[in-house]
Amino acid sequence: MIVIAVGPDASMVRHAVTKHARKADPDGQSTSEMDGAAVTMTDVIQAIGSVGFFSAGRVVIVHDLIAKMNKAGGRGRNAADWSALFGAVPDASTLILADPTLTGIPAGVRKALPADAITFQGEPPRGPALVTWIRNGAASLGSEMDEMTARLLAERLYPQSWQRKSTNPAFDRPPDLELVRNEVAKLATAAAPGPITRDLVETLVARGDDDRIFGFIDAVIRGDLTGSTTELDRLVAAGEDPHKILAQLGQTIELTSVLASAGRREPAQVGREIGLSNPNRMTAIARGLRSSSPGRARRAVRVMTTADRMMKTGQLRDPMDVLYFVIAGMGPSPH
Image (cartoon, rainbow, N blue to C red; front, side):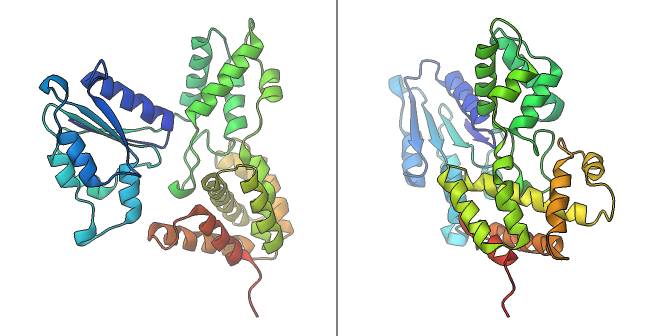
């Protein structure tokens, strides 16, 4: 059996891996794990082909192998031979490939999969489903949270993405269920023996990092090179994930483009019409546009689109390189 589990939610991937591993090897005596970043395809083939205890099948879990091979980007003779790997899995054994950093299974991998393979995507719930998940999580801890309070928690942690995906998947920031679960546990402990209240959420839950990086984003859109690089350095030094910074930058540039095309319409109303969970964010974006020269929004979209294309073609791989590319592209034009 072959199982492939991808993200974006790491906790959902872990749950899927544990479920399938225990189903194939309940006592775990014939299960081994490998770090895909440190092994070769040949290493995995040898591991899955070896005989388990008492001549039974074995379970081999490999973390991040697909991500590594996909990043290498080999083609032709240099392409990863997934058919060879999948063909080496004995009928009695189970190979599990876990890649939470991927949001889908690459075409080359999917094409080589046998018909009976199991695939799993850890897509976290959003909108009403996420609110229900939060409330159920509170109930499982012996606590209680009403619908509006659960919605407030979701909005506070993921103001721009708790309801729906970004229109550009490259800049989406899905809810992290493990982080949400930890916040609910913290709130349940603080609220005991009573229910979790809005006041507790506002007091104990820090706002999502989009609020902390707005200064950086505004500096980028203004074309302030010094301000952009300084703010980016501060964010990274504070431990912010460059992938998340890039995602929020892309989302804000999308919203800036929408607002620039809305003429003189009231910004918050535009935000409500496009379904933003925090329509007032459009008001802040409007202030930034008023302090920028005409055409900044269109230029930002062009630069971001170019960066997105370069990421997809492998010209830019590291998120910091992408961020610096956008900063430079939004800076003053050379004379």
